[in-house]
Length: 196
Image 1: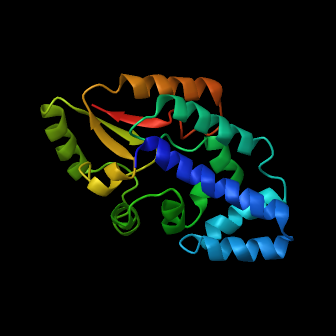
Image 2: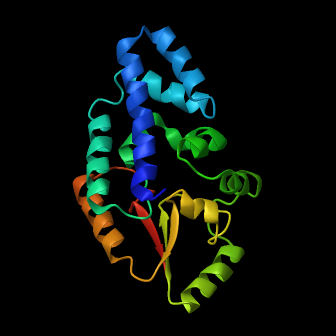
Image 3: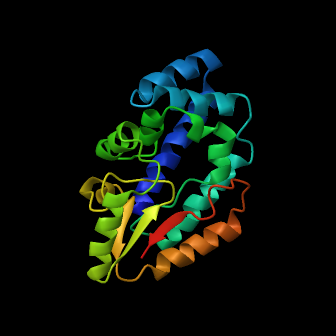
């Protein structure tokens, strides 16, 4: 799965939840959403409630715009979700395991983040980065994603991490996303992390 497919997966989930909340009575929609997304039922319910209570008015359109831009570039690594979407849901103050599953993070990376309290890159990441740089490559990650390892194959297959010799196309995508989707989330100045 490349970055575009990874991002499209999330937008598809959100779109399906939106459809269910529009077509079914609230309690039935919430129950169906919890069952359909059993790997992250609380996050799915949070998204459904946001649609039911009109907290995503305008925000959903931003998510669709982000998808259109991402599809044009077709990057190997997906960008972070529009920070306004995350803010509207208070997503990053929610259960880390469910949020990680919703975002398509590999279980090894979720486990590392939760059990090792890896909120930032650590010494092991820095050693790995040094090795990758010696090979003439740069690391590109989805902003906010902390992998268990900079060599994590599952993160690469999931479109969350890549070692590139030239990340210029992703840098252009990042610049366009920042221009087209200005936001108020102070922790996210970028949709990507570039480590070199």
